[in-house]
Length: 314
Image 1 (tube, one colour):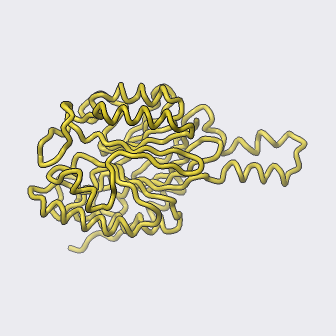
Image 2 (spheres, one colour; image 1 turned 30 degrees about the vertical axis):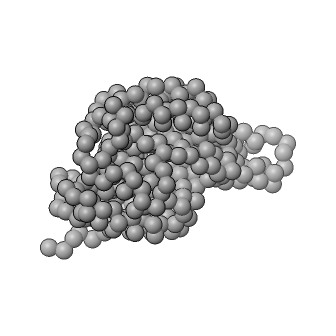
Image 3 (cartoon, one colour; image 1 turned 90 degrees about the horizontal axis):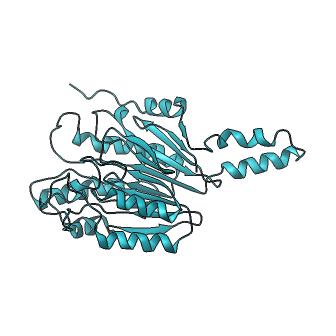
């Protein structure tokens, strides 16, 4: 039986019709700018120019997570061999969006029993991922280093470090690596339990120092969750959250790992868990998002297919 026809239009229609979930005290700002100016004596042309400037993104990027690519049969709702078709559908949308960069929030591949097989999974999907527009950033997930070591994974994708930071003119971005056991040992060669995730003391100190050096508003990327204390969460998440809150600059944390997606606001920081791309057999079951960072501080997340949209206010 042939595969059911792909339905990219459904993803596009959902993105156009879906109302973003507006969150934060200033979530009204997208529509509020002109309303606030309507009763003023400022010339209409100046009002329109100001409104355009306030809604023109300073940064544009794309987010996807938990691709779990593998050349193996489906397991439950995870359809590993359908991932390349989903990534191709996302590439069509991102081609018109033209992001500055694309972030993969971990579990780019699924695990294999041998280094050779897992390496081939990674090389295959990495080649396709590299064809997406914009710079690429990889966050390590537990399945990325099931058999591979971190060094082997990073070498194949051409990335120097597992945790690091980078800047744009407007924002500061941090990628964290929570693929460590509670005793501080890094994941690799099947030496871990996926529920045992930790940000080690050395990385936490680096995070504190990095946040102290930057005064830009900041978005953090991580695979395992920082907003829960269950098996999906980082074991020392409370200490990490305290560091983020103390800086006063962190606006949002974008994370994966929990395939159903979620959202929480903890002490003024938005914790957005993105849905897994691997779930479902067709391209209409896809899940990814574009993100626009607006000058006044709000973050507009436009979800495609199963991914919900959000308007995150400062």
